[in-house]
Length: 128
Ligand SMILES: *[C@@H]1O[C@H](CO)[C@@H](O)[C@H](O)[C@H]1NC(C)=O
Ligand SMILES: *[C@@H]1O[C@H](CO)[C@@H](O)[C@H](O)[C@H]1NC(C)=O
Ligand SMILES: *[C@@H]1O[C@H](CO)[C@@H](O)[C@H](O)[C@H]1NC(C)=O
Image 1 (tube, rainbow, N blue to C red):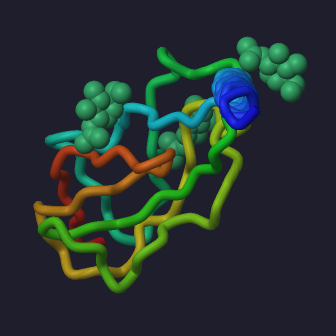
Image 2 (image 1 turned 180 degrees about the horizontal axis):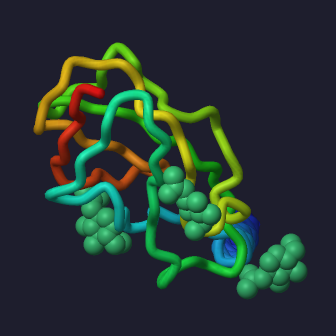
């Protein structure tokens, strides 16, 4: 009797896992690869620039939203978010933003979320 109910609950656990797997496949999280900014990119404070990313590995359905965060020397800057949360799939590979007023430097990076976030190469922010 007890064995029987153990088998039944094991079977239920297996089918619950299968359901979780298939709903994950139908609605994928995605961490796109950043194609701009890259090494050599210069953003001038106050100008409009594009952050761009590759659509090569874009799942049919993207369940996670997008957001772009500014880092300097590996630390999130006081500016923090460069964008509000946006629809990553609808953005279709780019987000245009205005370069914020920060201390000029060549050790800036952005994080593009994504699921856990993809980090850009170091690039430069220059004074206007
Ligand atoms: C994408 O989501 C729709 C609606 O939820 C679903 O019908 C479709 O099967 C999904 N496509 C893939 C490839 O997962
Ligand atoms: C950003 O990319 C879009 C789409 O290619 C383009 O229309 C827009 O002019 C670009 N903006 C800048 C600042 O380069
Ligand atoms: C960014 O995404 C690319 C493509 O998925 C991956 O190869 C790379 O390791 C990622 N880099 C980081 C820092 O997450």
